[in-house]
Length: 513
Image (tube, rainbow, N blue to C red; front, side, top):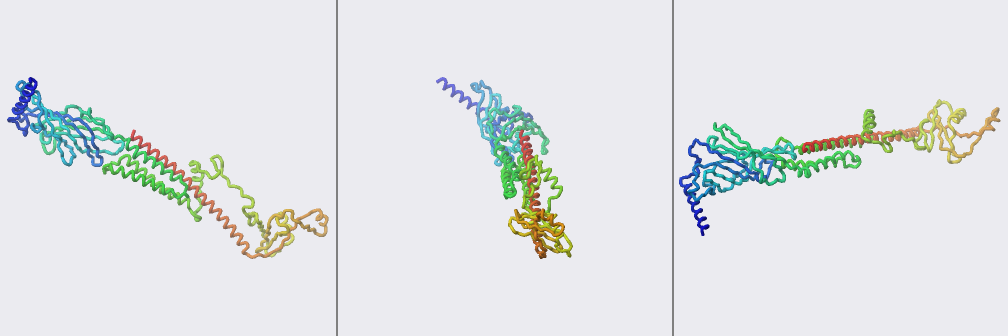
């Protein structure tokens, strides 16, 4: 009973205290005894959570606990008169409150904070704690995204009272981070507080404010694994387009596909970044990679034109043959089939019977054409026959009894051998007179010849076949040289672009470190 009586008595004194305090009290005026006095307000901020950082709209959403402490000259009492009541808690709307607002507020609805109670002490000290979800404007610098650090300022000050009427003081040198809930994207490195006294152009009186600078550092792991590493992998595919064979038909397709993939990643980054002049670091990396891939695709088209040059192509210039086919080819480790870095490429000897000879310059498996120039008025005399037998060894034919014919074509004696004769029957021709004894000891193979006047089209046909074959071999050799030039250029640009991708990757990783 005594305890209940005490509680009832204390509640009765609290009710009496509330009525006595607010009999002649108004919350519209500053609670000072003299209007020239300055009311001091102490501000303390506790950062509870970072809700969102909108880089595109440059808005920081935070959950804060704001504590304001001041003295009210009209809300004091003697504890002994009210049964020792030291403090009372009443709605904040009953008392005068400082009009402290967030200067850089970015809330489109200007929603106020939660209406909470104030704690009034017997000496007139009022402490007002209120939670608030604030949206503040923050200048975001994404130059080093995703390895960037941001500094967002939250400036608190009175909206109507100048420094001669109300002064602000910070309770601590920085915001309280003891109850901060860790953010998955941002790491808080500190939130120092600083008092500023500013003279605005509209008024001559000073206006104090307290600015809290929130230092944030982005956690880049998410962006490294979802944006950066895929871009690096795609970038290393671009130089491999030079390694594809030109006949595959996929060189240009690979470059275009890689370019489209990087464009998709670039759009993903652009959607989340503010449309400012500061291009993010990863955006620069994308742009540099896309430029490199565009250049590689253009070079691939140029090299494919060199590879597929037709029969009408000119021979490889001497400087290109010396610089590209000899010097640059060995640097890029490009060799012909069967050629190594220690062996020197030499032309293969012609196989027997693989070509032919015309006018003493071509030998064939099927026939041999030997031409000797004589005067048009002479015939195929025995002297010429002896000379032919001395200069040209008789040809044996696999067919027994086949003859070897020689004839005149426009004053030219032509001897056509149809093949070798193995074990052919030979006729011995002996001359009369003093040479009879010698002819008995010697056996000579006599080739019956007769002078035939053939038509001009025989020689023209043979020359046409010869020229066509030579032109075909020259065209093949020329095309082979141009293809090797294209292959050397492919390898050269492949190593160049690999080095460029490697150094760009090192650059962006160095920025991260």
